[in-house]
Length: 65
Ligand SMILES: [Zn+2]
Image (cartoon, rainbow, N blue to C red; front, top):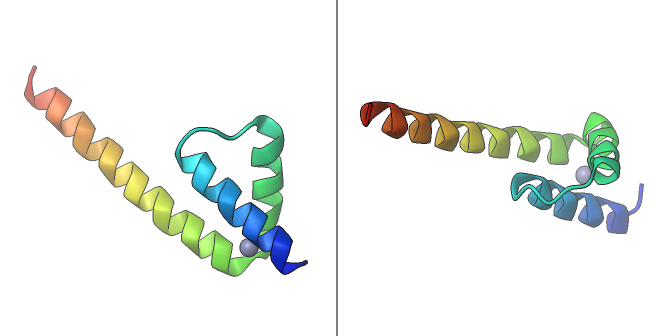
């Protein structure tokens, strides 16, 4: 694995969370996450933040019903 590849995958990780990733890029990202612990930890952390944001949005929508 090269540092360049790692940086590319870190960029893919960011784009995943803004919903800009193609299926092919998502496949590449998943392969990288499987063996790259720093990226995997970062991905998990961001995924928790994203899930928390979606949950809080869900609550605010429910409160208007
Ligand atoms: Zn990595």
